[in-house]
Image (cartoon, rainbow, N blue to C red; front, side):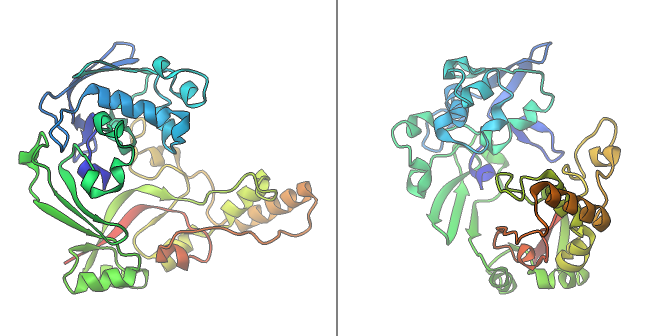
Length: 349
């Protein structure tokens, strides 16, 4: 959603490499610590106001502000004093981001970060319209007050029902945008989504888990690469899960191959390392270079670690463990928490 209506300093091209976005060019110091971004003078917000370097400085410092309690604040720990400010150990003025003028943004890093340019295309680093946010902190909650700087504007937003995006005439590269409008339906039930697809109400949909393999085999759905990893998060403050051996036992006991082949059936790849295939390594794919970090469904080792963990906690038996999961039917069907990476299934009409 955000990459449709917003744009950062850079945007990722079809090859996954950062291309000029709101910044038309940039300079990097020889030591890799200072980036100077030169913003486009024709970049505008959807209300006609110019997008400035001050909007980026404002947004980044707001992300790091301890009072924001932002989940993605750590994505700016690369900035000089970024982490210290987020932890209340430094002031906002100490953070390594500064608007030198309306169209020049200077960024200073703690350490050289080779992938920093790519990071500026990530939505957490998108700008915020300072002139709007200072007057109305709730501007982003309704379509009528939403201000954007990307290829589309938020024309309509019926909460929990639908979103309508329309081409943004103020976007600096509006001539590259071929679609005039995008209609997004919010559908929680995958069977309902599939029926809407079948009846022509949707052009793109995810197939129901029960029909995934059948639709792929029939050529009615296709598998596209998806750079991501599904994983289980342990609550380490819990008495039982605070034990590292028990956590490792649970991780090793998951039969990922069974899940992806017999439950998900969408071409997923068992995740035997956190970084999925597709990440660049030193010379080749990172996952290939590093190899598997553990054995899938290693039941014997899991049993051994479980017993050791229980002994350390003074227990003879593992008590029931409760976990939360989202409403995705594939996750609901998984007999155990699933880990997967490498693909996503889409239907095409």
